[in-house]
Image (cartoon, rainbow, N blue to C red; front, side, top):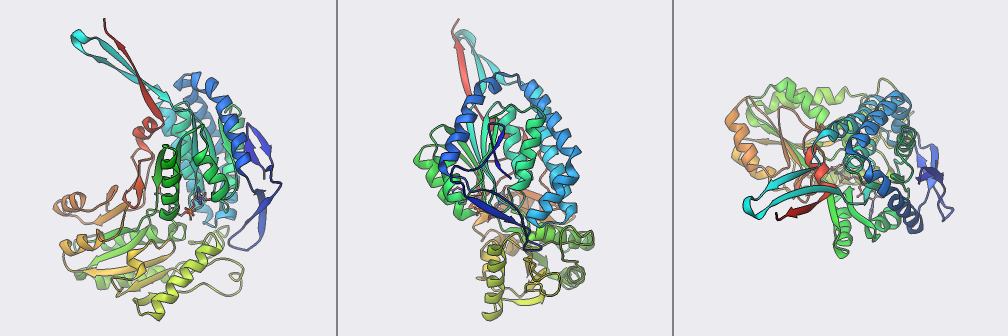
Length: 476
Ligand code: NAD
């Protein structure tokens, strides 16, 4: 596939290409241009040229277009979901959910198009003010590979509805569905240059987007390490930046929890998308009074999991997305085994054998008796490994939970309102779920505290994040 700049397919000026592989089979399924800073420059120019006409449309006109685009993407969801599975690895069911999730985001923001685009403020004898929310101009978006389509929606929908234009860089390992969707948005009527997709590496195209003087704001989703670099670059040119970074979300299961429901919550929370979700359950805290039965039920369910190619309808968990992921998780488990950082309750190794040898398959894994300084508890484990910690009172659980440098989400599983109140008040996180985990619908703000980032996506407030106010003060 080619990049999409100014509504057309283009190769890179470098004439270099990057292969995109199916992580389940090791086969090359396509290739994309290896973009350069020169390609970013062309894309930004297109976005600048498109800005005036796009921002002069009414918000309602832009909303109608987003509604229409969502419906065209829905019509093509089977093909898009298949492509997403092939480049990303996730089961077809999850890929379908993600494509539909993208449409939901577009529709949510389109639905906000009838909201007022400003306020009137009366100041008595001093006069009256009109406060307008203006679009910023060209915005940049940098996307990871784990939920590429959904995250594309989180960034493009509010930015475009507000009247901005955009240059977006997908990850190197999952750019294809994003490119296909952007072509559909253009067919739906998005004018050329409003959304430009530049493929390529973070160091070249990513940094060129952040530092380009005409890019007004950058929304980045990715790891904490890259987030630090992005913050530094954006700061050096005094640029507004949203950082949606990693997490190590805890799930706290109290002794009054509905155990069966919590077991299913832990399964979905940890193993959906092979555990490669920022808000996945990455640390499980279980009250000692129910720990025995909870852990044995969870282990039975984990051991029955069907791991395989996401295109196989039987598959409940696909491969990891890429070799780096595979090597990182293998290394983590090697260290856990060699250094006695915990007891492996099930799994713990790559999956080998016929049908698995060319893919990045990893066993769903549970680890008990985890050492407090193990990277399973101190870092972000971006894959299907779940450390389980048994606790005897809520105070201890909260203090262990807050020891993490991350603060994205937390769930508590209980029937007791006082416990909910305590967790809501004292746990450091951007979202607290009660009796569920992971779900992030477009209606609610999403983002973290501490090293999990700054800024929020989703919800009506994210729309304001893509505008600046301009005030007319009428001193009568
Ligand atoms: P990553 O940081 O390696 O890459 C993310 C994107 O940044 C990619 O497009 C990459 O090419 C680009 N990039 C890399 N170096 C760059 C640089 N120097 N300048 C600009 N861009 C650069 O992350 P990943 O491995 O793709 O994604 C996994 C991480 O993303 C996990 O830590 C996960 O928790 C996090 N994540 C966070 C959220 C959230 O909303 N908080 C959502 C999804 C994923």
